[in-house]
Image (tube, rainbow over all chains, first blue to last red; front, side, top):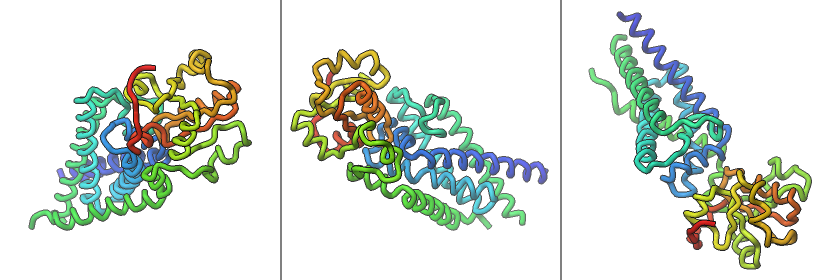
Amino acid sequence: MKRLEATLYHLCRLLLGGLFLYAGLVKADDVGAFARDVANYRILPYGWNYLVAATLPYVETLAGLLLLVNRRVRPAALVLGGLTTIFMAALVSVIVRGLDIDCGCFDPGGEGHTPANMALLRDAGILVLIGLAGWLRGRRERQL
Amino acid sequence: MGTDWRRIVLEAAVIFFLGVALGLSFNFRLVMDAFTGSLPASPAGTEEASAPAGRYPVPVTLEEVRQLLDEGAVAIDARAEELYAEGHLPGALSLPLGQADALIDSVLRKVGKDAVIVTYCSGYGCPDSFDLGVRLLEGGWRDVRVFEGGFPAWRDAGLPVPEGGP
């Protein structure tokens, strides 16, 4: 049982870490295109789209790295959980307003077009994984 | 012995602000330009800067665009027609990049090859205005500028944005 739990924990954190590291790096690589993706949501004032585009990828990258190297896992998971919750709120507002935009989750300006409802579903899955990783980490720390 | 939430939240805040600081340090210029609505006239080290003169449209700032339009320059909106209809620069012509080849002659039939043309789209990071500018230069128009702040910079400066279709 303990081994199953350990495997599940490492699987969760590696998957999430790799996912956010990738998401952060591809967006940090093309801040301008990502800023346009953010602007497409039509939520933030003009300059703020660029502020988000300039900083968000680095937060994702940093937290993803921490998950990968198995350090500060719960704080990193909290950061990513908070971000994912905000993403989901933004996606809900996109659906409510009926905007047809790319979610801008990964490769900015890429060919892919992930509709908001699919992205929302995916984010919900990610949020579950984040919660699971944080919870399992807490259990491990208490057992030591 | 419960979860040490205070420590976790504190460390999460550190991670978050560290990431923000990193991002800002790498992209400080871009963010500043976005907030002040101006781009440096000749972005050093970019492809445009190293390209031979005359083949690429010249970037202009918000102030320069206002002055050029006052002096009779022609603004051309490279965005989709729906976006144009929701609001555009006063007097701008609509020429979406995707339809440029089909529409260029009819939209620009009254614009002389010596006219000053300013293209724009959805702001920094939107390449359409630049690409349209290149297309116009290839089409024989000699003085083409690109307003990289685009529609968002114009609107956020509180300048008039008339609505309506092309």
